[in-house]
Image (cartoon, rainbow, N blue to C red; front, side):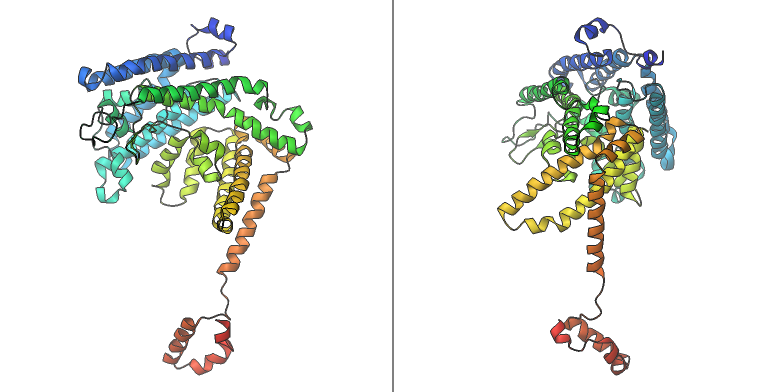
Length: 506
Protein backbone atom coordinates (compact mmCIF):
# COMPACT_ATOMS: atom_id res chain seq x y z
CA UNK A 1 0.00 0.00 0.00
CA UNK A 2 2.69 2.47 1.02
CA UNK A 3 4.76 1.70 -2.04
CA UNK A 4 1.88 2.30 -4.45
CA UNK A 5 1.05 5.49 -2.57
CA UNK A 6 4.69 6.50 -2.52
CA UNK A 7 4.89 6.89 -6.28
CA UNK A 8 2.04 9.12 -7.39
CA UNK A 9 2.88 9.61 -11.05
CA UNK A 10 0.70 8.80 -14.04
CA UNK A 11 0.06 5.16 -14.95
CA UNK A 12 -0.85 5.96 -18.55
CA UNK A 13 2.38 4.39 -19.81
CA UNK A 14 2.14 1.28 -17.61
CA UNK A 15 1.53 -1.06 -20.62
CA UNK A 16 4.70 0.29 -22.25
CA UNK A 17 6.62 -0.18 -19.01
CA UNK A 18 5.49 -3.82 -18.81
CA UNK A 19 6.46 -4.43 -22.43
CA UNK A 20 9.92 -2.93 -22.08
CA UNK A 21 10.48 -4.29 -18.59
CA UNK A 22 11.35 -0.97 -16.94
CA UNK A 23 9.66 0.52 -13.85
CA UNK A 24 6.90 3.00 -14.56
CA UNK A 25 8.72 5.80 -12.71
CA UNK A 26 11.70 5.53 -15.06
CA UNK A 27 9.45 5.40 -18.12
CA UNK A 28 7.63 8.54 -16.97
CA UNK A 29 10.90 10.34 -16.29
CA UNK A 30 12.26 9.54 -19.73
CA UNK A 31 8.94 10.46 -21.38
CA UNK A 32 8.90 13.86 -19.63
CA UNK A 33 12.47 14.58 -20.66
CA UNK A 34 11.71 13.68 -24.27
CA UNK A 35 8.65 15.94 -24.20
CA UNK A 36 10.79 18.74 -22.76
CA UNK A 37 13.39 18.16 -25.47
CA UNK A 38 10.80 18.28 -28.25
CA UNK A 39 9.41 21.55 -26.88
CA UNK A 40 12.81 23.08 -26.20
CA UNK A 41 13.72 23.63 -29.86
CA UNK A 42 10.59 25.64 -30.77
CA UNK A 43 10.84 27.49 -27.46
CA UNK A 44 14.27 28.74 -28.52
CA UNK A 45 13.43 29.49 -32.15
CA UNK A 46 9.71 30.38 -32.25
CA UNK A 47 9.06 31.70 -28.75
CA UNK A 48 11.98 34.08 -28.49
CA UNK A 49 11.71 37.47 -26.82
CA UNK A 50 11.38 39.36 -30.09
CA UNK A 51 8.26 37.36 -30.99
CA UNK A 52 6.39 36.75 -27.73
CA UNK A 53 7.99 38.90 -25.02
CA UNK A 54 9.47 38.12 -21.63
CA UNK A 55 6.28 37.48 -19.62
CA UNK A 56 4.92 35.06 -22.19
CA UNK A 57 8.14 33.09 -21.96
CA UNK A 58 7.76 32.98 -18.17
CA UNK A 59 4.16 31.77 -18.48
CA UNK A 60 5.12 29.02 -20.94
CA UNK A 61 8.03 27.86 -18.76
CA UNK A 62 5.83 27.68 -15.66
CA UNK A 63 2.82 26.04 -17.28
CA UNK A 64 4.72 23.27 -19.07
CA UNK A 65 6.90 22.67 -16.02
CA UNK A 66 3.87 22.21 -13.76
CA UNK A 67 2.20 19.85 -16.25
CA UNK A 68 5.31 17.68 -16.54
CA UNK A 69 5.63 17.57 -12.75
CA UNK A 70 2.03 16.46 -12.35
CA UNK A 71 2.47 13.74 -14.97
CA UNK A 72 5.67 12.39 -13.42
CA UNK A 73 4.93 12.87 -9.70
CA UNK A 74 1.18 13.41 -9.44
CA UNK A 75 -0.12 14.90 -6.22
CA UNK A 76 3.40 15.08 -4.81
CA UNK A 77 3.61 18.38 -6.68
CA UNK A 78 2.15 20.04 -3.59
CA UNK A 79 5.47 19.50 -1.77
CA UNK A 80 7.22 21.71 -4.31
CA UNK A 81 4.45 24.30 -4.09
CA UNK A 82 4.40 24.33 -0.29
CA UNK A 83 8.18 24.67 0.01
CA UNK A 84 8.42 27.39 -2.62
CA UNK A 85 5.43 29.47 -1.44
CA UNK A 86 6.45 29.49 2.22
CA UNK A 87 10.01 30.38 1.23
CA UNK A 88 8.73 33.24 -0.93
CA UNK A 89 6.77 34.60 2.02
CA UNK A 90 9.95 34.42 4.09
CA UNK A 91 11.74 36.51 1.48
CA UNK A 92 8.90 39.04 1.44
CA UNK A 93 8.35 39.42 5.20
CA UNK A 94 11.53 38.04 6.75
CA UNK A 95 13.30 41.37 6.86
CA UNK A 96 16.93 42.33 6.68
CA UNK A 97 18.23 40.06 9.41
CA UNK A 98 16.25 36.87 8.99
CA UNK A 99 14.87 36.40 5.46
CA UNK A 100 17.80 34.39 4.07
CA UNK A 101 18.28 32.42 7.28
CA UNK A 102 14.56 31.57 7.47
CA UNK A 103 14.56 30.30 3.89
CA UNK A 104 17.66 28.20 4.48
CA UNK A 105 16.37 26.62 7.70
CA UNK A 106 12.84 26.04 6.40
CA UNK A 107 13.77 24.65 2.97
CA UNK A 108 16.46 22.35 4.35
CA UNK A 109 14.12 21.25 7.13
CA UNK A 110 11.27 20.54 4.71
CA UNK A 111 13.60 18.54 2.47
CA UNK A 112 14.88 16.59 5.49
CA UNK A 113 11.33 15.65 6.54
CA UNK A 114 10.65 14.35 3.02
CA UNK A 115 13.91 12.39 3.08
CA UNK A 116 12.90 10.76 6.38
CA UNK A 117 9.40 9.98 5.07
CA UNK A 118 10.87 8.27 2.03
CA UNK A 119 13.39 6.40 4.15
CA UNK A 120 10.57 4.99 6.30
CA UNK A 121 8.21 3.93 3.53
CA UNK A 122 10.62 3.07 0.72
CA UNK A 123 13.76 2.09 2.60
CA UNK A 124 16.60 1.34 0.24
CA UNK A 125 14.37 1.85 -2.80
CA UNK A 126 15.31 3.71 -5.95
CA UNK A 127 11.84 4.80 -7.00
CA UNK A 128 11.93 8.28 -8.53
CA UNK A 129 9.93 10.58 -6.34
CA UNK A 130 9.54 14.25 -5.50
CA UNK A 131 12.65 14.34 -3.28
CA UNK A 132 14.79 14.67 -6.43
CA UNK A 133 13.13 17.91 -7.63
CA UNK A 134 12.93 19.04 -4.00
CA UNK A 135 16.70 18.78 -3.67
CA UNK A 136 17.20 20.99 -6.72
CA UNK A 137 14.50 23.43 -5.57
CA UNK A 138 16.15 23.70 -2.14
CA UNK A 139 19.33 24.82 -3.87
CA UNK A 140 17.39 27.37 -5.93
CA UNK A 141 15.51 28.74 -2.92
CA UNK A 142 18.54 29.13 -0.69
CA UNK A 143 20.76 30.59 -3.41
CA UNK A 144 18.05 33.13 -4.35
CA UNK A 145 17.48 34.07 -0.70
CA UNK A 146 21.16 34.77 -0.11
CA UNK A 147 21.49 36.62 -3.42
CA UNK A 148 18.54 38.83 -2.43
CA UNK A 149 20.07 39.46 0.97
CA UNK A 150 23.35 40.47 -0.68
CA UNK A 151 21.65 42.72 -3.23
CA UNK A 152 19.08 44.41 -0.99
CA UNK A 153 20.72 44.70 2.41
CA UNK A 154 24.50 44.51 2.09
CA UNK A 155 26.98 47.20 1.14
CA UNK A 156 28.72 46.27 -2.11
CA UNK A 157 32.07 46.80 -0.38
CA UNK A 158 31.29 43.80 1.82
CA UNK A 159 30.71 41.50 -1.16
CA UNK A 160 33.23 39.49 -3.12
CA UNK A 161 33.35 39.82 -6.90
CA UNK A 162 31.38 36.57 -7.26
CA UNK A 163 28.75 37.69 -4.76
CA UNK A 164 28.33 41.01 -6.60
CA UNK A 165 27.72 39.18 -9.87
CA UNK A 166 25.06 36.97 -8.27
CA UNK A 167 23.38 39.62 -6.09
CA UNK A 168 19.68 40.22 -6.78
CA UNK A 169 18.59 43.78 -5.97
CA UNK A 170 14.85 43.38 -6.43
CA UNK A 171 12.43 40.75 -5.18
CA UNK A 172 11.14 38.86 -8.25
CA UNK A 173 7.41 38.97 -8.84
CA UNK A 174 5.44 35.77 -8.39
CA UNK A 175 5.50 34.85 -12.08
CA UNK A 176 9.27 35.26 -12.37
CA UNK A 177 9.69 33.28 -9.17
CA UNK A 178 7.50 30.36 -10.23
CA UNK A 179 9.11 30.34 -13.65
CA UNK A 180 12.53 29.98 -12.01
CA UNK A 181 11.26 27.18 -9.76
CA UNK A 182 9.42 25.19 -12.45
CA UNK A 183 11.00 25.90 -15.85
CA UNK A 184 10.20 22.86 -17.94
CA UNK A 185 13.68 21.98 -19.24
CA UNK A 186 15.10 21.76 -15.71
CA UNK A 187 12.27 20.56 -13.49
CA UNK A 188 13.05 16.84 -13.68
CA UNK A 189 16.70 16.73 -12.69
CA UNK A 190 18.01 20.30 -12.84
CA UNK A 191 20.81 20.97 -12.53
CA UNK A 192 20.90 24.03 -10.28
CA UNK A 193 21.18 27.34 -12.09
CA UNK A 194 21.33 30.68 -10.34
CA UNK A 195 18.58 33.28 -10.63
CA UNK A 196 20.51 35.95 -12.52
CA UNK A 197 21.65 33.39 -15.09
CA UNK A 198 18.06 32.21 -15.58
CA UNK A 199 16.67 35.73 -15.99
CA UNK A 200 19.41 36.56 -18.50
CA UNK A 201 18.35 33.48 -20.46
CA UNK A 202 14.64 34.37 -20.39
CA UNK A 203 15.37 37.91 -21.52
CA UNK A 204 17.91 36.54 -24.03
CA UNK A 205 20.64 38.85 -22.82
CA UNK A 206 23.16 36.05 -23.23
CA UNK A 207 22.39 35.22 -26.87
CA UNK A 208 21.23 38.47 -28.48
CA UNK A 209 24.05 40.80 -27.47
CA UNK A 210 24.67 42.79 -30.66
CA UNK A 211 27.89 44.36 -29.42
CA UNK A 212 29.96 41.20 -29.53
CA UNK A 213 33.14 41.33 -31.57
CA UNK A 214 32.64 40.36 -35.19
CA UNK A 215 35.39 37.74 -34.89
CA UNK A 216 33.30 35.79 -32.40
CA UNK A 217 30.71 33.27 -33.47
CA UNK A 218 27.10 33.90 -32.56
CA UNK A 219 26.39 31.87 -29.39
CA UNK A 220 23.78 29.68 -31.10
CA UNK A 221 26.03 28.82 -34.04
CA UNK A 222 26.36 25.03 -34.23
CA UNK A 223 24.22 24.69 -31.08
CA UNK A 224 22.08 21.93 -32.59
CA UNK A 225 25.23 19.92 -33.33
CA UNK A 226 26.32 20.33 -29.73
CA UNK A 227 22.92 19.17 -28.48
CA UNK A 228 23.09 16.09 -30.71
CA UNK A 229 26.58 15.32 -29.42
CA UNK A 230 25.41 15.49 -25.81
CA UNK A 231 22.40 13.33 -26.64
CA UNK A 232 24.72 10.70 -28.13
CA UNK A 233 26.81 10.71 -24.95
CA UNK A 234 23.63 10.35 -22.88
CA UNK A 235 22.48 7.48 -25.11
CA UNK A 236 25.80 5.68 -24.71
CA UNK A 237 25.55 6.04 -20.93
CA UNK A 238 21.96 4.75 -21.03
CA UNK A 239 23.04 1.67 -22.97
CA UNK A 240 25.88 1.14 -20.52
CA UNK A 241 23.46 1.44 -17.61
CA UNK A 242 21.10 -1.14 -19.14
CA UNK A 243 23.49 -3.65 -20.75
CA UNK A 244 26.71 -3.73 -18.74
CA UNK A 245 25.29 -5.07 -15.43
CA UNK A 246 24.21 -8.22 -17.26
CA UNK A 247 27.73 -8.72 -18.61
CA UNK A 248 30.20 -7.43 -16.04
CA UNK A 249 30.34 -6.33 -12.42
CA UNK A 250 26.64 -6.16 -11.61
CA UNK A 251 26.29 -3.60 -8.77
CA UNK A 252 23.51 -5.70 -7.24
CA UNK A 253 26.13 -8.30 -6.24
CA UNK A 254 27.78 -5.88 -3.84
CA UNK A 255 27.28 -7.15 -0.29
CA UNK A 256 25.92 -10.46 -1.62
CA UNK A 257 27.04 -13.92 -0.40
CA UNK A 258 28.99 -14.31 -3.65
CA UNK A 259 30.91 -11.12 -2.92
CA UNK A 260 32.20 -12.40 0.41
CA UNK A 261 33.40 -15.64 -1.17
CA UNK A 262 35.78 -13.89 -3.55
CA UNK A 263 39.46 -13.15 -3.03
CA UNK A 264 40.67 -9.77 -1.78
CA UNK A 265 42.00 -8.74 -5.20
CA UNK A 266 38.80 -9.66 -7.02
CA UNK A 267 36.65 -7.85 -4.44
CA UNK A 268 38.63 -4.65 -4.99
CA UNK A 269 38.41 -5.07 -8.76
CA UNK A 270 34.67 -5.82 -8.57
CA UNK A 271 33.97 -2.73 -6.46
CA UNK A 272 35.87 -0.63 -9.01
CA UNK A 273 33.92 -2.11 -11.95
CA UNK A 274 30.54 -2.05 -10.20
CA UNK A 275 30.88 1.60 -9.19
CA UNK A 276 31.94 2.56 -12.72
CA UNK A 277 28.77 0.94 -14.05
CA UNK A 278 26.58 2.41 -11.30
CA UNK A 279 27.67 5.92 -12.29
CA UNK A 280 26.25 5.50 -15.79
CA UNK A 281 22.72 6.34 -14.65
CA UNK A 282 23.92 9.65 -13.24
CA UNK A 283 25.89 10.40 -16.40
CA UNK A 284 22.79 9.62 -18.45
CA UNK A 285 20.46 11.82 -16.41
CA UNK A 286 22.86 14.77 -16.22
CA UNK A 287 23.94 14.70 -19.86
CA UNK A 288 20.35 14.39 -21.03
CA UNK A 289 19.36 17.32 -18.81
CA UNK A 290 22.26 19.38 -20.17
CA UNK A 291 21.17 18.65 -23.74
CA UNK A 292 17.54 19.59 -23.01
CA UNK A 293 18.59 22.89 -21.43
CA UNK A 294 20.90 23.72 -24.33
CA UNK A 295 18.15 22.89 -26.84
CA UNK A 296 16.01 25.55 -25.16
CA UNK A 297 18.86 28.04 -25.48
CA UNK A 298 19.89 27.84 -21.82
CA UNK A 299 23.49 27.22 -20.81
CA UNK A 300 25.61 29.82 -22.62
CA UNK A 301 28.49 30.82 -20.33
CA UNK A 302 30.68 33.02 -22.54
CA UNK A 303 33.49 32.56 -25.01
CA UNK A 304 36.74 30.65 -24.78
CA UNK A 305 40.13 32.12 -25.71
CA UNK A 306 39.52 31.32 -29.38
CA UNK A 307 36.20 33.18 -29.50
CA UNK A 308 34.08 30.03 -29.60
CA UNK A 309 30.84 29.99 -27.56
CA UNK A 310 30.78 27.83 -24.46
CA UNK A 311 27.62 26.00 -23.37
CA UNK A 312 28.58 24.54 -20.01
CA UNK A 313 26.43 26.58 -17.62
CA UNK A 314 24.11 23.58 -17.17
CA UNK A 315 26.83 20.92 -17.41
CA UNK A 316 26.75 19.02 -14.11
CA UNK A 317 29.46 16.42 -14.70
CA UNK A 318 32.80 16.11 -16.46
CA UNK A 319 32.94 12.40 -17.27
CA UNK A 320 36.57 12.54 -18.34
CA UNK A 321 37.51 14.31 -15.11
CA UNK A 322 35.70 11.70 -13.01
CA UNK A 323 37.11 8.66 -14.79
CA UNK A 324 40.60 9.81 -15.83
CA UNK A 325 41.71 12.29 -13.15
CA UNK A 326 45.03 11.87 -11.36
CA UNK A 327 43.98 13.60 -8.14
CA UNK A 328 41.09 13.15 -5.75
CA UNK A 329 40.34 16.88 -5.83
CA UNK A 330 39.83 16.91 -9.61
CA UNK A 331 37.79 13.73 -9.31
CA UNK A 332 35.45 15.29 -6.73
CA UNK A 333 35.28 18.66 -8.54
CA UNK A 334 34.17 16.90 -11.73
CA UNK A 335 31.15 15.25 -10.09
CA UNK A 336 27.84 17.06 -9.42
CA UNK A 337 29.55 20.34 -10.21
CA UNK A 338 26.61 22.65 -9.59
CA UNK A 339 26.06 21.25 -6.10
CA UNK A 340 29.72 21.90 -5.32
CA UNK A 341 29.31 25.47 -6.57
CA UNK A 342 26.20 25.89 -4.41
CA UNK A 343 28.06 24.61 -1.33
CA UNK A 344 30.97 26.93 -2.02
CA UNK A 345 28.85 30.04 -2.56
CA UNK A 346 26.39 29.52 0.28
CA UNK A 347 28.40 27.66 2.89
CA UNK A 348 32.16 27.74 2.42
CA UNK A 349 32.41 31.41 1.44
CA UNK A 350 30.08 32.53 4.24
CA UNK A 351 30.85 30.29 7.21
CA UNK A 352 32.68 32.30 9.89
CA UNK A 353 34.65 29.25 11.03
CA UNK A 354 35.05 25.52 10.38
CA UNK A 355 34.30 26.03 6.70
CA UNK A 356 35.10 22.49 5.57
CA UNK A 357 33.08 20.96 8.39
CA UNK A 358 30.16 23.27 7.58
CA UNK A 359 30.24 22.17 3.94
CA UNK A 360 30.32 18.50 4.96
CA UNK A 361 27.38 18.92 7.35
CA UNK A 362 25.23 20.82 4.86
CA UNK A 363 25.97 18.35 2.06
CA UNK A 364 25.12 15.41 4.31
CA UNK A 365 21.73 16.82 5.33
CA UNK A 366 20.96 17.78 1.75
CA UNK A 367 21.52 14.21 0.55
CA UNK A 368 19.47 12.51 3.25
CA UNK A 369 19.91 10.31 6.29
CA UNK A 370 21.05 6.89 5.13
CA UNK A 371 24.09 5.86 7.18
CA UNK A 372 25.98 4.94 4.01
CA UNK A 373 25.98 8.59 2.96
CA UNK A 374 27.79 9.58 6.13
CA UNK A 375 30.27 6.74 5.80
CA UNK A 376 31.08 8.07 2.34
CA UNK A 377 31.38 11.68 3.49
CA UNK A 378 33.55 10.76 6.47
CA UNK A 379 35.87 8.57 4.43
CA UNK A 380 36.03 11.14 1.66
CA UNK A 381 36.89 13.97 4.08
CA UNK A 382 39.76 11.97 5.56
CA UNK A 383 41.15 10.97 2.17
CA UNK A 384 40.85 14.50 0.83
CA UNK A 385 43.02 15.83 3.65
CA UNK A 386 45.68 13.19 3.06
CA UNK A 387 45.53 13.62 -0.74
CA UNK A 388 46.44 17.28 -0.26
CA UNK A 389 49.45 16.25 1.81
CA UNK A 390 50.54 13.77 -0.85
CA UNK A 391 50.34 16.38 -3.56
CA UNK A 392 52.17 18.94 -1.43
CA UNK A 393 54.97 16.67 -0.18
CA UNK A 394 55.37 13.81 -2.66
CA UNK A 395 54.50 15.30 -6.03
CA UNK A 396 57.50 17.70 -6.21
CA UNK A 397 59.90 14.74 -6.15
CA UNK A 398 58.39 13.46 -9.42
CA UNK A 399 58.52 16.73 -11.35
CA UNK A 400 62.19 16.49 -12.34
CA UNK A 401 61.70 14.76 -15.70
CA UNK A 402 59.05 13.69 -18.18
CA UNK A 403 59.39 10.04 -17.17
CA UNK A 404 59.10 10.70 -13.44
CA UNK A 405 55.99 12.82 -14.05
CA UNK A 406 54.52 10.01 -16.14
CA UNK A 407 55.22 7.52 -13.34
CA UNK A 408 53.58 9.84 -10.81
CA UNK A 409 50.52 10.32 -13.03
CA UNK A 410 50.13 6.56 -13.54
CA UNK A 411 50.35 5.89 -9.82
CA UNK A 412 47.95 8.67 -8.86
CA UNK A 413 45.51 7.68 -11.62
CA UNK A 414 45.25 4.15 -10.21
CA UNK A 415 45.12 5.44 -6.63
CA UNK A 416 42.36 7.94 -7.50
CA UNK A 417 40.25 5.35 -9.31
CA UNK A 418 40.52 2.95 -6.38
CA UNK A 419 39.85 5.71 -3.88
CA UNK A 420 36.74 6.89 -5.73
CA UNK A 421 35.15 3.42 -5.76
CA UNK A 422 36.27 2.71 -2.19
CA UNK A 423 34.75 5.96 -0.92
CA UNK A 424 31.49 5.80 -2.86
CA UNK A 425 30.21 2.22 -2.64
CA UNK A 426 28.46 2.94 0.72
CA UNK A 427 26.21 5.28 -1.29
CA UNK A 428 24.76 2.15 -2.90
CA UNK A 429 24.83 -0.11 0.16
CA UNK A 430 23.20 2.49 2.47
CA UNK A 431 23.11 0.37 5.67
CA UNK A 432 25.87 1.04 8.19
CA UNK A 433 26.73 -2.49 9.23
CA UNK A 434 26.65 -3.74 5.65
CA UNK A 435 29.15 -1.03 4.73
CA UNK A 436 31.36 -1.97 7.66
CA UNK A 437 31.19 -5.66 6.74
CA UNK A 438 32.26 -4.89 3.19
CA UNK A 439 35.12 -2.73 4.38
CA UNK A 440 36.08 -5.45 6.85
CA UNK A 441 36.14 -8.06 4.07
CA UNK A 442 38.79 -6.00 2.25
CA UNK A 443 40.63 -5.28 5.53
CA UNK A 444 39.86 -1.54 5.52
CA UNK A 445 42.95 -1.35 3.34
CA UNK A 446 42.47 2.19 2.08
CA UNK A 447 41.56 3.45 5.54
CA UNK A 448 44.76 1.88 6.88
CA UNK A 449 46.89 3.37 4.09
CA UNK A 450 45.27 6.76 4.54
CA UNK A 451 45.71 6.84 8.32
CA UNK A 452 49.30 5.62 8.03
CA UNK A 453 50.03 8.35 5.50
CA UNK A 454 48.40 10.94 7.72
CA UNK A 455 50.57 9.91 10.66
CA UNK A 456 53.71 9.97 8.51
CA UNK A 457 52.95 13.47 7.25
CA UNK A 458 52.11 14.60 10.78
CA UNK A 459 55.47 13.38 12.06
CA UNK A 460 57.27 14.98 9.11
CA UNK A 461 55.52 18.29 9.67
CA UNK A 462 56.21 18.22 13.38
CA UNK A 463 59.90 17.51 12.87
CA UNK A 464 60.21 20.35 10.37
CA UNK A 465 58.50 22.87 12.62
CA UNK A 466 60.42 21.87 15.78
CA UNK A 467 63.11 24.54 16.45
CA UNK A 468 66.76 23.45 16.78
CA UNK A 469 68.42 25.53 19.54
CA UNK A 470 71.92 24.72 18.27
CA UNK A 471 71.46 26.10 14.76
CA UNK A 472 71.70 29.83 14.00
CA UNK A 473 72.49 31.67 10.85
CA UNK A 474 74.72 34.70 10.95
CA UNK A 475 71.85 37.17 10.84
CA UNK A 476 70.11 35.51 13.78
CA UNK A 477 73.33 35.40 15.77
CA UNK A 478 74.06 39.10 15.19
CA UNK A 479 70.50 40.05 16.16
CA UNK A 480 70.73 37.99 19.34
CA UNK A 481 74.11 39.52 20.26
CA UNK A 482 72.85 43.06 19.74
CA UNK A 483 69.76 42.45 21.85
CA UNK A 484 71.77 40.96 24.69
CA UNK A 485 74.31 43.79 24.62
CA UNK A 486 71.54 46.34 24.87
CA UNK A 487 70.29 44.72 28.07
CA UNK A 488 73.75 44.35 29.51
CA UNK A 489 73.55 40.56 29.77
CA UNK A 490 75.50 39.37 26.72
CA UNK A 491 78.47 37.97 28.66
CA UNK A 492 76.29 36.23 31.22
CA UNK A 493 74.19 34.37 28.64
CA UNK A 494 76.72 33.73 25.88
CA UNK A 495 78.28 30.59 27.39
CA UNK A 496 74.99 28.85 28.05
CA UNK A 497 72.91 29.80 25.00
CA UNK A 498 75.19 30.27 21.99
CA UNK A 499 76.74 27.41 20.00
CA UNK A 500 80.49 26.84 20.38
CA UNK A 501 81.23 27.26 16.67
CA UNK A 502 78.38 29.08 14.98
CA UNK A 503 80.24 29.59 11.72
CA UNK A 504 80.57 25.86 11.06
CA UNK A 505 76.99 25.22 12.01
CA UNK A 506 75.56 27.89 9.68
